[in-house]
Image (cartoon, rainbow, N blue to C red; front, side, top):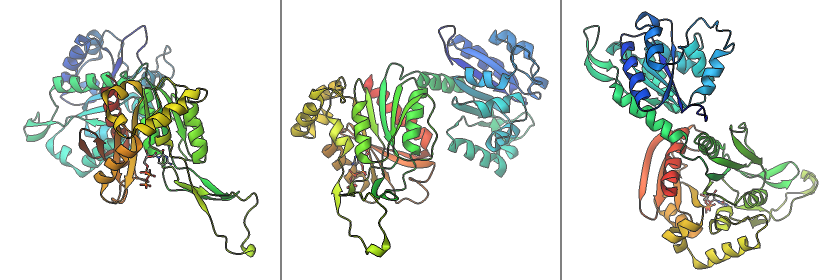
Length: 431
Ligand code: CTP
């Protein structure tokens, strides 16, 4: 991680491939761009270029196997923690397959497994190795986890074959690394609230109304926002996910508790992202004891839950929702002025940037536009929850960004990538 002592750190993994010599040029380009570069070499990489060359170019010690450095007894962990981005260039088929399977058998693969920083891989290999199903499956797995793939070029290869497999241009790899680094700090000084997961509306002490939301999307948005430097408050309904690193996490159960927690932290915000799948209704009464079958079939009366997004969307960023009497007034005022306040330029300056989600099963864009207007959001992220293999229980999804100006589809992407696309838009709007 970057500190006051040094700029952001690029951890460059070099694997055993003839294109390893091009990593020298990559180090030079990144250093010229003002980055700190720390190199990790696999034993096979040292057969192609020497650690001395890389140490000279990077002006840093080169990390090598075997790990016997008394100054760095848990070297893979300290390297992983230092990294703002991990780029493996060139990446062999062998290393890609190991990364996909979580194999940790040398310093680079062990470090990669321990590293939470974004991963960029730039493969280089023979065409047949590139096309092999094992390699393509490994790449699909890595992309699904959010790794950035820099596709190899087509051309004449070292073995004499002509086809895909040549390492991408080092300028292209350097640009991808710099883009990831720009992202890594672009939310410093920003405060973001995220709601996530389902809510539970209790019928009696052991039964409740809920939905299958996994919370993955909200947790991914929160985690990525924190990684990009934001102060993040995550208010989550019951999910099995662990607290994302670097976020203040408030666990709640019901919609009313979620609203209360979100209100309490709705001050000084730059953006609020409402990913939670809030139950729209709750039982009018919660039985204090378990309902018994013998007492007959109960008839449930439901009442509407508060709409958390609509309640908070009109509040100014500087208002303390917890204590400020003005908060509720501001919300009322915004509600009274209707949807136009959401998209007017002056309102954008006064309120946090508000993002709502729309889970739909039909007429996705139409319903998203209705919610944009009705809820007072700047952006609605719409998705078709009826699409097979996507959404609730899946790690990937396909979104449609709906704003007053445009509708833009993302295509199918891992949820971590989608989270970053959303944060890119938030950064843009805050600029
Ligand atoms: N939302 C909320 N509080 C609620 C209901 C929804 O904050 N009580 C927010 C969600 O977090 C989401 C957006 O409103 O950002 C839209 O939620 P969605 O479930 O798609 O729509 P609803 O408003 O519940 O409308 P409907 O179920 O009729 O589609």
